[in-house]
Length: 111
Image (tube, rainbow, N blue to C red; front, side, top):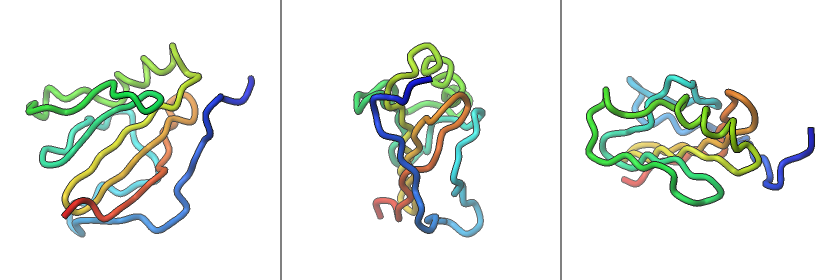
């Protein structure tokens, strides 16, 4: 298998926890994770182009990461990313291989 045209990244720093009671901080993201944050920004990008953005949806109607994993499997030679930004923390994940999306940024959010 050849190396992708894009560069794989991985976050080496400390995870930004955000809320101590309900943190979602993790170095990988699960396939059943809904792509939504409520207040903030949640999106999926392919090579820097927007594929999906959360927009006034009910939690039950939000797509899971598995939906985008299935799309990425058919078109894997691209830089796929999930961005989740809230007031207290933000994460960005990059797809490295099948069912393997890795944290590439953790930050203190926008507030």
